Length: 79
Image (tube, rainbow, N blue to C red; front, side, top):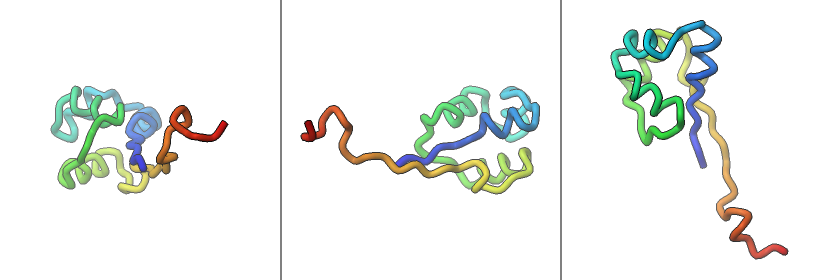
């Protein structure tokens, strides 16, 4: 299972730069990059609250669940 954060799409729709967004929610541009690139392991509710406030959206607009095959294809025993 993977949870994807779709901040890129939201920023593009709103014409907002990463720097402006980072300043508005109170985190560094580097931490915004961690969120955008899917490297975040957790998000504080306070940060999620700020993101939703600034982007005028709901948490569900930002988060997407993707189910993954538990066994990568190259390790599969299927010929």
